Each structure stands twice: as structure tokens, then as C-alpha cells.
Length: 350
Image (cartoon, rainbow, N blue to C red; front, side, top):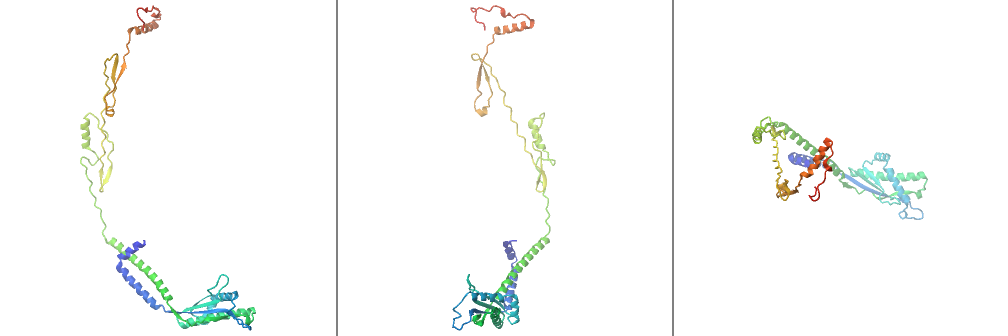
């Protein structure tokens, strides 16, 4: 289910959606009043050197050691064991320590303590306890290292923890968390209710019964798929003694509106009549025979062309020697080819 479908469901169940939205809004207002207002205070301390006998200005000489001691104090104050000791001494509010403002070469010599709680006294007490623990930790480590008191580093207060302000961060955080949870629960409830309602409506509706539709009857076609009318028409066309034209496609059953029916196959194409036989026209035209060769007149669009062949004249005198040779070969006698040839005066033998 995508966001568009969820919006459609919320619009369809707008009454329930509006009621749940009012309920969530009232719950958020109650949470805002139930969460108490918190107070916050900030204290700042600086690591400096103690002034010597020669009247050296402690604020004018700042080196890397001061930033390192401030960073050391932050790591000690954020340790779990240190936090337990501070709570036992009255630091019941939440606090954060940092030494912001340093550079890549050196750490910042400032120590910032921010305490947040439900009452002004608790936050002020927490800030004072944390600062005192930082001073004690710095002095104890230098005493353990044997540093003379005149050369030790100390924390001096720059900003006292007396400027207490109110904050609504906890209220806004609580309202945001509970508001998001309330909207998610509202959408789930509306979607589940809509699905259940649709399922109930579908179950309450009577089932739909599909009524069978009678099959359409084709005139001239029997239930078994025979075509008596077409069969008789083919018989009348081809004659009583001629065979019927074979069926090209047998009838195949098909479904039409829920009932069986047959499909009428297409008739076989009519056969074209045979082309007329070639006719030969005999005649004499200066010793030649004329023959007509049939050509597709419809394709050429012209008459049959006439091709003339020369007539060969056969003479009996040419056939006589061949006959005598055949008779001589059959009887074993010499052929009559030794007879005298006719003279040139009588004509040339052909």
C-alpha cells in the first residue's frame, strides 16, 4: 500500500480520521502540560597560572599546558565513576562539560559547564559542584607530581552559575515523539477498520449466479456440424454423377456466449476452366505450312502469332535406293547401286 492509497482510505473514512486526529491533538496538549518546564544554567572557568613574586600577569601568559589541563578536566568529569560521585554530593541535574574554542595546535583553556534540571536550585548546585570537582582534580594531580604551589595551574571562574534561564526543549521533544507515534497509530487503525469493513460488505452480499446463455443457431447447420444446404447446392452445381467438392476445413467447435456452436468452413475455390486446345490451321502459302500456337491472349492482349515452317518436298527417286538396299541386305544379293547412273543430259540425280 503506497501513500496515495493511504490518503484515499483516510478520505473515505474521514469521520473516523477526524475523531482520531482530535484525540491525538488533545493527548499532545496534555503531554505538553504534564512535562515540567526545565531550567538551565551555564558556568565558565579558565585555567591560569598563579601570580609570582615578580608581579607577572597570569592572564597575559597563555601556553599549551593550560589547554591540556582543561581538556584533562573534561575527560575526568565525563567519566561514569566521577558522575556517580557528583550525584552523591548533590549534583542531581544533568550537566555537560566541554572546552570549545580550541585550534589544531592547542586546546582551549576554557572549561564550560551547562546544567539542566527541573528546579533552579538543582541546576545551580550542580554547576557549582562540577566546577569545584575540576579545581580539586587539577590541584591533586599537580600535588602528586610535586609542582610547587607558586607554579601550579588553577581554575578561575569567568562566568558564575547564577544566570538561570528556562528552556522548553524537553517539552518539544516529548510532543514530537508522541505526535509521530500518535499519527502512525491513527493511520494503522483507520486502514485496518476500512479493510475489515470492506471484507464484511463482500461477505454480506449474495453470490452472483452466472446464467447460461443459449447458443446461437446458424440457419442451415445441424447440431452435429453438417451442412445439408451447402451439400445440396454443391451437388446441383457439379451434377448428380460428379463427386462432391471435398471439404477444406472441417467444422471446429467454438464457444459463443457460454454455449457450443460450429464454425462454418469456407467453400473451396472454383476451378478455372481449362485453356482451349491449340488449333492448327493447314494451308499452303508458297510451299509453307501455317501453324497457330496458343498464347495467353488475356496476358498479352493480342492475337495468336502465326509461325510458318518450310515444306520439305519428298521424291520417290530418293526413297527407291534405300528400299533396294534393304531388300538386298535381307536376301544377300548385291544392291542395284552398280547400275549405270543416268547421264547428265537427262538431268542431275538428287
